[in-house]
Image 1 (cartoon, rainbow, N blue to C red):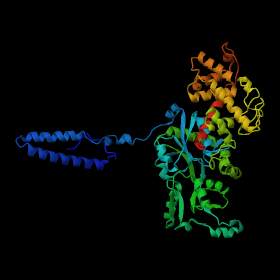
Image 2 (image 1 turned 90 degrees about the horizontal axis):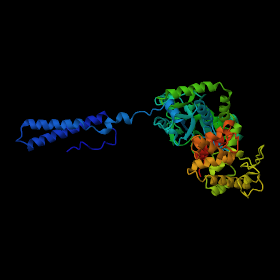
Image 3 (image 1 turned 90 degrees about the vertical axis):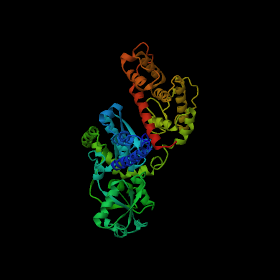
Image 4 (image 1 turned 180 degrees about the vertical axis):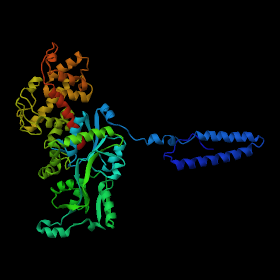
Length: 524
């Protein structure tokens, strides 16, 4: 007998499957009715007919659940600007690469990253960056709602426009062939070099070019084969490889040719002069960001900002910084503290890791503090007398009643980091009543910046205003800002008076933001 209450099949039923399913069920019912007729010969025919109708009635209510839910399961993810603003965050998918988003000497950088910072500020939203682990899945993950925007150099194509809406273009470029010159090209004449490498896309017929599959490069090679009437063999690469990594594969002889946008190919060729990037394989293409088709408000707001920001000279400065300034690009690539090549933040990483154990904090958080204080410049000093990597003040130890911070020379990097971490631990221990670890760290950082007793005043002010004195976010941090004004710092309960509250407020936020970048780029 048919189980009318079986679980839905895993595969979603389409119209043909449903038709087959119903046909099969009717056959089963017919068989049952016939068997029943044989078993119940004494019964009147009306009873048999009634039984048949009963089974048909049951059948009408036993469609597979997944047929009913098909439209719900396939419903597009909907979240436009109004909903994004309710959350307060702009979630963006981005590529980890030497031009889009990376870490250099402790500082997050990148063309897309810098533009996104300005867009998020314009929209009054917090920026939440998500690094895509598979560039072939960018548009799929956007559709699923894993981000609101793709900030990556996507060429606008008809195929992509079927699944995404594109912003106004950020820049124009063309696709070029990336190939390697002969080994001893420096000793050759330009004419001989040109004779030894491809000069026309027609010469690619029958040869192999390596690209990721879900790219405009793949589309272009497919169309190029049709246009030329000869096949170019396309070797498809993994989606987790960036264009820069694929270009490096040409340098390393792992692949023979690839295709890249001219600006990306040229800036990489400035560091690898053995590369030739002079053969175009496409006309000019528009490079843009993408949103879901059902996010018109976000699209319009982004386009409005792009049109406005293009008029700002800063727009071209940022582009030139990442795609035109070959000297700075080569300097980054050669650096030991360029996250694309290494897993290091600074030359002090080992010292930081050792001392982080004293306080049991993630060493990358300590590194974020040191960057905030000195940009990893050991000789740094301030007008107030603070010196060294962690900007230790002469009276810091005395203020907290600590007899010996172990710092005899504040410009000694080892002593400075050790003393700074010991001071952080002293502050952290002073907030033992705060049970939430992240909140406790934020109180510690604020105290390191503006002084322990100013933060205690802010806690008092929080209590006076009915706020939670053991929560930094949206509570005590607002009160540290309030202590900038006389109506607050002149209250009789406030013992230590005025403080420029914007400094500790920004200090905590900037360190945590930087720490989030470090977590993305640098493994423990």
